[in-house]
Length: 261
DNA sequence: AAATTATACAACCGCCGCATT
DNA sequence: CAATGCGGCGGTTGTATAATT
Image (cartoon, rainbow, N blue to C red; front, side, top):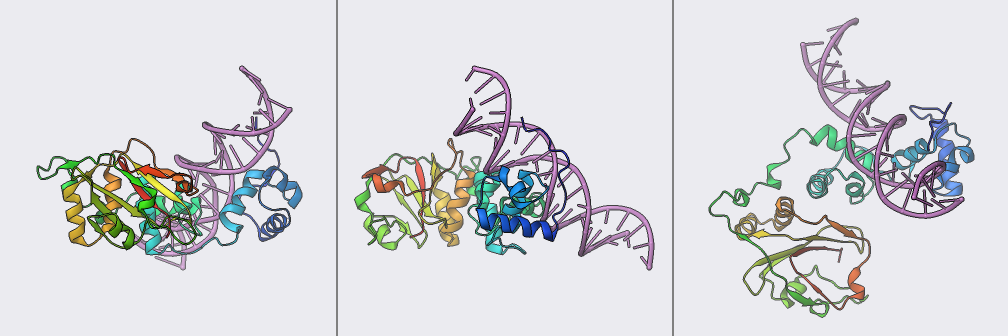
């Protein structure tokens, strides 16, 4: 068991402690946190050291107020992921999980999130106009998509839309009907390089699509749609491009969010 | 100007999953 | 198999500062 360490310092870090910790990690690298206190000459527990580094001292941590686009992303991702702060923070460069969590708790939790994120009244199943369409599986070949010069698939292009008979497309997302006139959609979301997110078991509402197309915001559309969907499976984040080893794949009842082109 | 209340956020705590013994 | 130790996570607290009374 991890017994409580006796006699270790707690509370706010001093400048001197920060310097010691920074020096230690610059010399020995990140990790092996249990060794850090003795290495650095700090009377702190390993967790305190780790936290101080990750949340404050680590280079490239962004400080100051959150920009509008960062807030926007937090709201969207929180809708998809819930309180999984480290996952959310992983999508917001320079922000730590603690920062995001604090921001959410102090600025967003109590507030009603901007209605533009889920404003579509047509999503309401009690609305008689609302007709939910469930996409059916559809097989697409990897070769259907343009391949970049580096060999990677490039989905997020107008060319991809054109070559796949997509019903509509914009620079960042596409939707199209399958053979049963059921609407499917996928969307590029700003991610780390080569990172892919996919959502499964997405159902869509055709009015939803119309509505957002009228609004001219496919970008808002698919994420808000996603946020409203009963997803049977959790969002899956894949760190590598899985298509490199696949020749074909099913769109199935999946919504794809794909890497930076 | 002083007292009180609200806010922001750094830091702590307990729990978890995993690896090792 | 259980015990232990580790890194990591999310919930919560403590406290400095700002805003309000």
